[in-house]
Amino acid sequence: MITRLSLVMRMTVCVLLAGAGAASAQADYPNKPVEIVVPFTAGGGTDLIARLVADYLGKKWSQPLLVVNKPGGGGVIGARAALKESRPDGYTALMDIHTTSSMLMGAWKTPPLKLEDRKFAGRIVRDPMVFAVKADAPWKTFKELSDVVKAKPEELVWSTVGPAGPSRYTAYDWFTQIGVDAVKTKMVITEGAADSMTKLAGGHVMLAIHSVAEAHAMTKAGKIRVLAVLSPSRVKFLPDVPTAEEQGVIKGVRVQWWAGVSFPAQTPDPIVKKWESAIAEMVKDPQFLAAAERINMNIDFLNAAETRAFVEKEVAGYTDMATKIGIRR
Image (cartoon, rainbow, N blue to C red; front, side, top):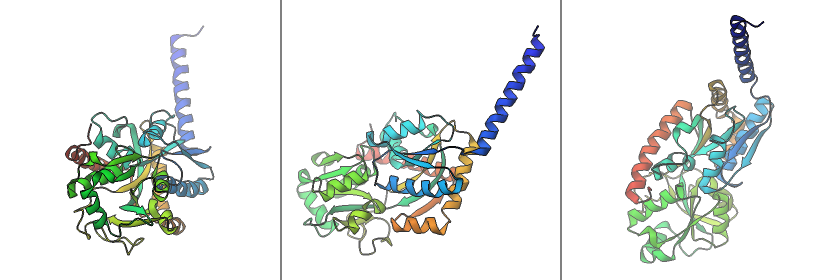
């Protein structure tokens, strides 16, 4: 006969064994392939940095890190899949960016994803935005393009990866500063920066606003031309391209591109900490830095706590910005 005492003892042993098993699994992590979800199409900046991270950590941990592209909804579909629909066991990570975090929360009063839905492992990259046109476009300077848009805003067709993405924030800030009604322009939503740049090179849109790294391949191939960089000073990857402020068009820098790694909120802390430590080591590795340099990625690391504080500050800033430029809903 099983007494109440013996039953309690058995349950206690089971709980202890389960706890020991969980601790062992975390200590052995990762012991199988890990997916890094990129919420955009292949070839964009988020995808490029994800593949560098996957290559580095895959070798470090002797386990495959698989980049999985899940585009759609301005990044929300892939981000939800990673943060809300996957098991919080550390085997699904999100290559998180402004579009799926701070900008999304700034643009929506009730956003589909919130800060409390994720644990950050760290920020890896921060990159300025650029204004790019087709290589044979008639405008030679950003000032010249701005004057044309002021005169005929209805003729401007520009691309963005989503209604709450950096392209839209940057474009609307530009429109506000030069006195253009954004509603008169035509916004085309694409599935990612690579898709946007392809549409620009093909003449389907007149202007694309993306990061320095995202514009790199098409610029190098001579298919697009960068008119301005949104940065306090010129950047080393585009030394001949003047800043927007230098051309007397946009004052200040309120939008920037960044990418980091996050996990579902219930992911065990030891696993997230292991990623944080590995990323901190990775961003100092000469081979990784050389690889990032080749794709014009500006490595700018923040640890988990710093990343969260950075994003919280951005949420406040983008909420204010979205309200003032009329895109908060």
